[in-house]
Image (cartoon, rainbow, N blue to C red; front, top):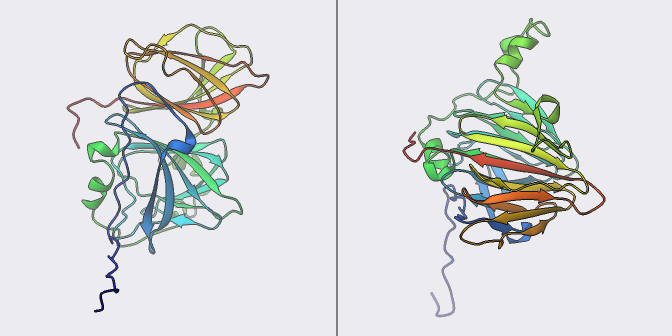
Length: 300
């Protein structure tokens, strides 16, 4: 080998660990400042992630699938977790499949799908535009619920993309299918509705509320004002539409986290702080707020 020749290192062949940005105080997180990550292989397909926050309570990221892209399971990327996970589609369309049962569902922009622990899942974008998905995940990967759990699962020996359980019983078995689905629909039409206080100008749609994960879609109307409310669970608020003032106070930082958030921007809300939302523009603002609560002694 000559003095000018170099040995190129081989890239790792296993699954890359997802970055885990951790915050302990309320924090503004601009979309352009989030941590970027690529995972996958030639069998599973490749997915691009924008990791918003990943603590011991809650994991939040946005992932993208370009037109025609997909993710499946592979030896190095077993797509099965030990958590409650919501995939909420921001743009495009996501087709989700459980390759163990053959169940296939659709999630269009403005809706999502919730699945629980030990659910195999593959994702597909057969459309002509990029699919953008906001993911809320608890108990989070820091508790061993993602790659660590997946590596311990026996691989699927067969994969299915047509659910034969309902053969010769459709649509008569539709109620049974909905009751046993792997992927629960999350949409304002299926949500539990309420007001932030007693004011309909801040409408809440509770999309998901499980033992570990709560996700709320909020719509705040122009001119809305409200009192401060205590943050009881660690939360990440992500603006989807419009322009939203988020006013946050805490004993440690006072008003340091107060800012205007635009689509894609987020706010990490620490337990013990207090927050209120306002809209000054002429159009309403819409956001998603994920909250996680996992006991300190929780184990798999």
